Amino acid sequence: MSRRRFYYGWVVVAVSFLTLFMALGIRYSYGVFFVAIVREYGWSRGATAGAFSMAMISHALFAPVTGTLIDRYGPRRLFPLGAIFLTLGLVAASRISSLWHLYLFFGVIIASGINTLSYSPHMSIIPKWFVRKRGLASGLVLSGIGMGTMTLAPLCESVIESMGWRAAFLVLAALVLFLILPLTALFHRRSPQDVGQCPEDFEGPEPSRSRCVAEESISSVKTPKLWTLDDALRTGAFWHTTAVVFCNGVFINMLLVHQVAHVVDAGFSTMLAASALGLVGLIGSAGGIFGGLLSDRIGRERAYTLGSTVAVVGILLLLLLGKSGGPWMLYGFVMLYGAGYGSMLPVTASTTGDLFPGNSLGRILAIQSIGFGLGGALGPYLGGYFHDLTGSYVAPFIIAMVSVAVGVYGIWMAAPRRAGIAI
Image 1 (spheres, rainbow, N blue to C red):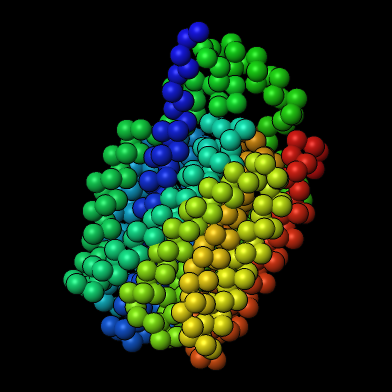
Image 2 (image 1 turned 90 degrees about the vertical axis):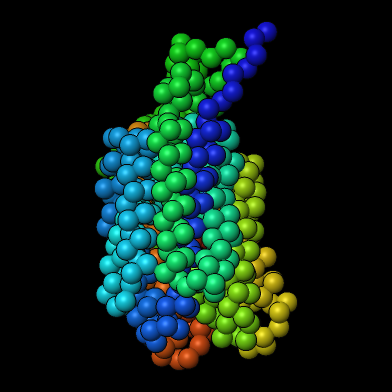
């Protein structure tokens, strides 16, 4: 018997992991820069958090362009361009001296570069490579977000403490330029056919194009429709999954921007707060892998509900931290919220891949990503607004918990368990 060929899809997973590690690790380290910039310039938290909201609006506006480009040109052309754009934005951010600079450099230029390298373009690629292991592969790729946050948030805080936040932006720019640009240009591929292989579900000891075609035709019994964007827009499932993505944007980005400030307000050091943000990312990575694998076994809805429940308990502990200051609450938040929210992301991505397979998946995910951008703009702004109004984060964190609950309702209404059935 011939030896089974190494499946190139795992190279795509590794490169995608590293790309999200840097791109979204940078976005999700904003809370560390947030504290340093507010401290230096004395801008209000609402105004400074508004730059992150601006970034998420840019994400929403640019998402359809990214979706069209990834479907048309593939990752080897699009991702290096995004890396160049992100590098330029980070260098420019090191020269910020006015509030409008923060909005332009972080809120527009950096945000556009991150959008090109972020969630939706990667999640349009992975379903082309994996079928049975789609949840696991998505979880592995998305674990890069958490690992990036775990690594980059403390790294940035360390550089900020020793050389200042401007130097930290330059360090990030160098990492993107010399790591992400060459990796994506050299090793990324759009689909198994680009390397003469079949999707993971059809790969045999000696894969051939005829075997792929034959088995794909058998698989079409399970997946009777290849969706276009127009088809998807006419379904209730699309809008329910978009609501899930919107809710994710609200609570994830609210906590990313404000959790470090809240922990510092509760009496902990800035480095400990940054490390807690990083540990949320680390545990989120493990949660993402477990959540993706679990969703392959017990279904997307059940796995998402379990992760959401754990995340809500974690947010509740963070809310109570401001009242008691007990360190065990901080550790409990890190463990529970990290595991919960991390497990939810690959389930959301896999759900869309299950419901709307086809070559338009990039555009479908991009339109949904508008919802994430709008939710991501609203969440940080509400966090800053209510803190400035009331002097606490009670109202924002209650909004975050409600958003999680609404997302659970949305995924059950989308019903990925019925994927392949007329919706």
